[in-house]
Each structure stands twice: as C-alpha cells, then as structure tokens.
Image (tube, rainbow, N blue to C red; front, side, top):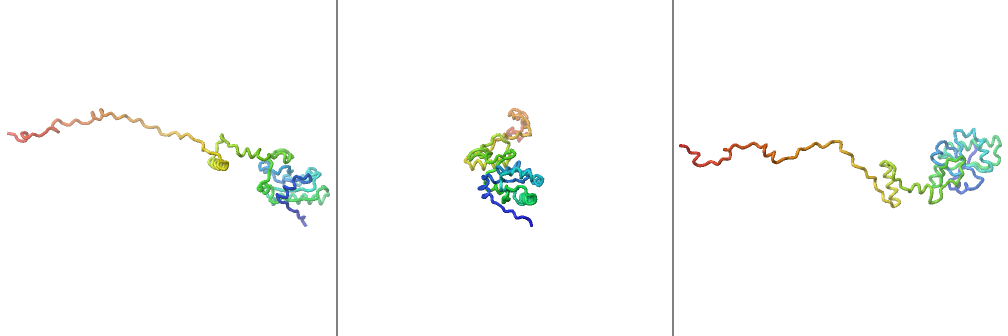
Length: 218
C-alpha cells in the first residue's frame, strides 16, 4: 500500500521554513530559472530526480523534515515525494529524516499568497539573504518609470493604469505626423489681365444704341 504523505499549507510552511531542521525541495524543471523559487530551497528536477536521490540525502544532512513541491503540487511534487519515501524505506538511508511533506498548491500557491520569492541563479540558493528588504529592491524596480522603452499599445495602457495608481501623470509619447505620400501639383496663379485678354471682343455694333431715324430709310 502506497504511503500517505501529508500536505502543508503556505502559511504553515512560512512559519516553519526559518527553522534549521526544514529543507524545501523544488522538483520543477526549467521553469525555476525564470519563474523564481522559494528562498533557500533545494533544486532537484523531476526528470532526473530518482537518479539523484542519494545526492539529495547528502544535501539534506542535518534536516529531519523535507517539504516537496512543484508548480501546483499535483503531479511532480507528490510523485517525487513518494519516490523519496519509498527509497528511504527500502535502503534505510537518511535515518535522520523523520517527516516528508508536500506543499499544498505548490510554488504557484506560495507566490499567489503574497510570499516572497527569490530570483537568484546561485546554486544552492543562499536563502532569505537574497530577498530585497521591504521598500527596496524589486519594489523600486517596478515603480521607476521607463522612459526610453518602445512600448506597444497594450503596454502603454498598462503603464497608464500604473501611473494613475501611484498618482503620476502619464503622457503618451508624441509622434510626428506621417509625411504625405502625394506631392501637391503646381497651380498657376490667376492673372486678371490674362483673363480679360482672353475674353472675346464684342462687335462694335452689338451694343450700339438704335436710333429712331435708323429704322426708317427713304
């Protein structure tokens, strides 16, 4: 019968992780490199986990509680935790390890609960010493406006909302109007004299007044 492994919530792990007897084992794969990780956690990727169990036992010396997790702790985390528990039961190695647990909702749940995460690339992670202090670090990086970025329309809308949130004034970068692709045609100035000269000259007798004597001829 498969061994039942208990779960621990993010709040419970947060209160326990500072204890020296706790080790957090992250079994995610490449996403750890760009999604961040729980500060101080050990990294043993799931696709090579079984072969590296002896290495994990050495890395967890002095620890009596191991907490496993993946992104959601639904597949990889529980599977690796059971592998580890079965290995200890069969080989009798890691006698000092008394408790094996799984982080409920995994790393995504930890981050969603507002807990601090680490983005260092150090192996192993040095723990909370890499986390920014309150009011500094990554908080300032997110509040410093970026002036020289070539932002898309969606990003500009998001930036405008952030500016309004902090009470800043956001002005959309001005763009020069596009040049007209059509060249205006040259127009000849109108000369009143030329218009007058082009008018046909009326015959002399067209507007000559008719006299009474002209209609009667002898």
